[in-house]
Length: 311
Image (cartoon, rainbow, N blue to C red; front, side, top):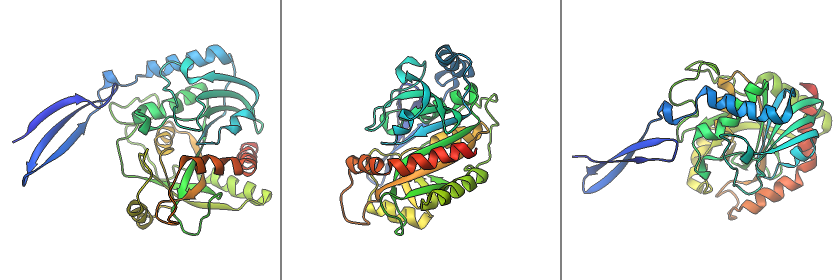
């Protein structure tokens, strides 16, 4: 016997659940299904693009740069910059996490026209994956063909240390839905898109060469997505290591999926802000993430701008 209960998962994604009796216990099953009328249409993306174009005129970004926790300083380095609050862009969600300013900065960095997200959205803030990745598709419509995505993450690989910079080679996502759920929008890409080389090998090669020239030790590894906002448990970290993860975090993957669907080239960096749960025995905090970002400011800025110059 099922006892149905239908309700909205959130304002943009309805859902349905059923409760199944199992040996004296009840198991709650949640069915999440996107409905096109409750999701964004191509015209929604165009509306956001046109609103931004009203601020920037004929400026066309070459690169979208998404800045993770505490890494917003790169946006402040942007020359000839136009700064737009997310609140002033139709369909952009607010960014409420610590260390995320919530501004779109357009200007020059590393000799390239850039569109910089000074702070990102996260699913743990109550947003769907479609909402989290929404700015990526808008940037693609503005003209960006490349995305550099950054984050602060927890080190799973025991050879890593806080302060290390990891070049992302691949990712693991076993949780939640996908930003591509629902009816496909063919103007962006195909129904089923390949993720074999999501992190563009050519750009990874550039990153290695730039790091070597600058004397920066660049780690390399697999990033695993966890939904958050709670940090992972020691058992989850042991499982992540078995699965092949070198770092864990609560962002990046939704944007990468959307960017890959749009045909964008992708380069990803993780700042190892702390060792993940259970490795050192120390409790984790958001302050150590921000402190690690501040300490790495010089190296991280030089690496990213050096990569931009070589693209």
